[in-house]
Image (tube, rainbow, N blue to C red):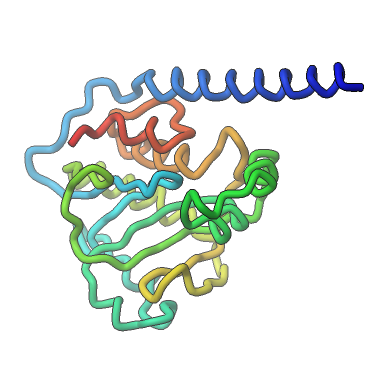
Length: 217
């Protein structure tokens, strides 16, 4: 019995190691290889909290107005709606709601999300224009690139879906579209959004580092 338990743990460890290696490789292979930041356009920001990554955009830019989607009454404290930027992220419902920080991560939550779920959310935070730093990187997109990015983000909201307050007074969760699993993670969503816009990013970005490495401080 002890032998079989040992083999099981070795097998699980092997799978995890293979996943980490595959993610590192996928994150290092560029798509949109020839992309360069626009000389003049819309400044967006890529952020991470160490678990999730997100994309921060102006509430109004290049003809895109996010205010009808992210409304003040959706917030626990509507006063935060006066901020001029929004952060968007996408992920599995339970993982998002129960793991705001690494301290909240539980193995059962990770396993359930990795197996797969169609119960997904868009996380939206109302923020002032961020200051670039270790966990926030600024990227300038052309108008066309920004509009493609905005279309990708908007498509993540389920038509007629509901909403609920977020972790604090300035954020909310919205019913999303899409299937979450170990391949299509919240960070892969960020990478896919940037890839659709035309930004140079990794081919597969399952981890925060595989997104952020493309946008040095």
